[in-house]
Length: 82
Length: 157
Image 1 (tube, each protein chain N blue to C red):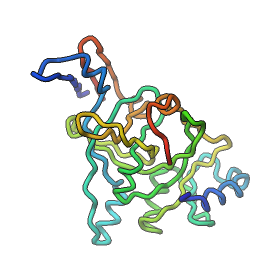
Image 2 (image 1 turned 180 degrees about the vertical axis):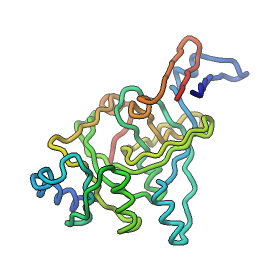
Image 3 (image 1 turned 90 degrees about the vertical axis):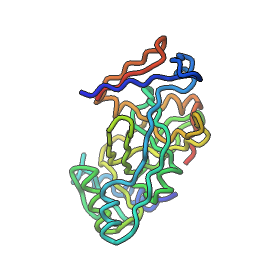
Image 4 (image 1 turned 90 degrees about the horizontal axis):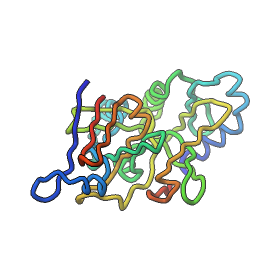
């Protein structure tokens, strides 16, 4: 899966990230923390400037993960294959 | 505040509530790459891909807006995250993408720092694919009136 390495880094360092960057957006490329930003837009702009059009992870640092609910997906009215 | 009425007509240009039932509340939409990526490509003297056109379906049941994952990846946009969604087969992880939506009929453009990429393939109305689900993150800034008996809906923003 694309961003698997970045997600692993996030999970492995979550406690540390929460301590320093809770509710901020962190930018992670491969297994490296690039920076923390107030908004997702700022993080994306920084990622594009630094890495160009490459995959990188932007993730809000929160204790609980957001779960998005889609009744149309849940009921199978729409597909949801990644 | 602009008010947009969308009537659904059957053959012969008669308003037909059954067409709204069949199609759902749809808007024409163009999906483009995010502004930051467009600026980057321009600075690199690279061409900017043409927008993908299709339908946006208003979905009051979902929290965050979605884009067809094939449409957005065909534009060359890379994912910037993942989120967990509930589906018929249980919870699955979906990629998040930055995207820009333009609604030609409404003179409205929305830039999203991230929307959820989902597989909307096979969802087609009148020969055009549904490529966007407009959900409650967008509707939080709108007034939506669904007039079933009248065969139209009204959107103000």
